Length: 193
Image (cartoon, rainbow, N blue to C red; front, top):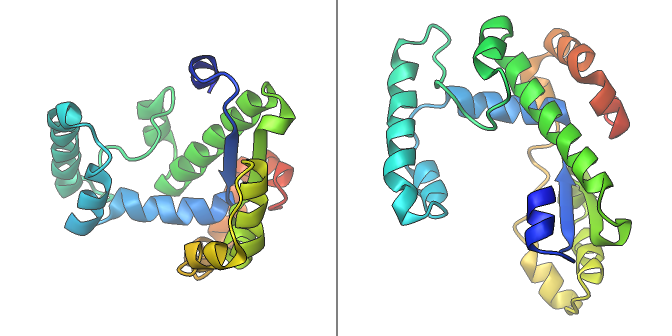
């Protein structure tokens, strides 16, 4: 973020954060997902053409790895943490996902803490999907953008809160307790514990 802020001085930041336990459940699904062509095509749209060979080979290798993995997981998915190989050997996949969430959120908190508060808006994912109209209106005010109520309602008509709590439920109480112990400080700071 400091690099982006130097390149785009005066930029405004929309920081969307989510319950780390629910995020862990979602991330684990991606780590262990079967080949999903529609999902891949949706993501490929955002990869520069010149980068396609590099990312294509990495993805192919990760898929091959999944075939032989005893956990039936990809070789990598999501943010690559420092000491990732060690983390993958030392922790369960759920713990790896939780640590990825925690380190990203902690870094975003630190970096955004260095930016003038009037240039940062924090959006709690759960609030946005539960009340999308007022949350989008809050974002638009922050961006000094005017939109009618009808435009706002149309923009969020497909927003759903159907995924809330799914990660926690899928993981179960015992696993949730372990992950809360692992990432508790960050969960607590964001009001999830």
